[in-house]
Every structure is written in C-alpha cells, then in structure tokens.
Length: 125
Image (cartoon, rainbow, N blue to C red):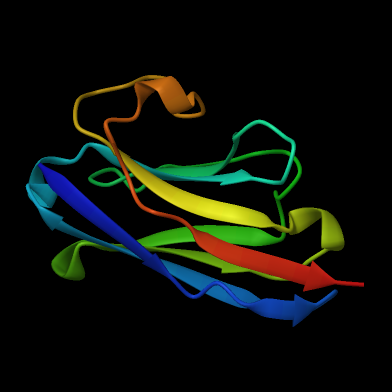
C-alpha cells in the first residue's frame, strides 16, 4: 500500500504562483513514477504532469507546458508541482498519483495505482 497526501492548494490571483506537494508513505520506495492530475467541476479528470522517479524524465500537458514544473525529492518521497502564471482555467482539485510498475505512457489516469485525496486550487480573475 502507498499513501499519498497532497498539500499546498489555495486561492490565488491570476498570474500568481503556488507549489503543491505530494508526500508518499508506505511502499512508496517501489513507485515507478508519479503524476499530477486535476479535475474541474463538471469536467473529467485530466493529466497535468508526471515524472519517472529514477530517470527524472518529465512530461507535461500542453496546457501547462512552460508554466508548471514537476520535481521530486526521492529522499523525502515527495513530489512537487510548481505552478506559475496561473490562469482561472487552472482552477480544479489537483490529485497526485503513483504508478508502481514500468509504464510507457504516463498521461492515462487508469494506469495509476494509488491516489491522494486532492487539494483545491482556485485562481481568481
């Protein structure tokens, strides 16, 4: 079992920044990759970013590329999502998730094994 706890969500004005954290515990050392997804009211959950924990390879949705940065601190079993130049359309509940085995495509939520409870990000215009 892996437990994931997100933090850092808040209300911020457009153009501002936030950093989300996702702390993993349990069998987190066996995770292959971690990702961030988000879900806005009335919309489906969508991929935001992912990182392969050993290789450090990073992947982003086109909508956040150049504004968001995913990073990890393997010693702390923590993944971060630095969000800059936030827009009202970034408003959503943000979830982190982990994949336990080698996965080629990291943008599909169905491939993730464990999920956090989510943290709310609200961007006002």
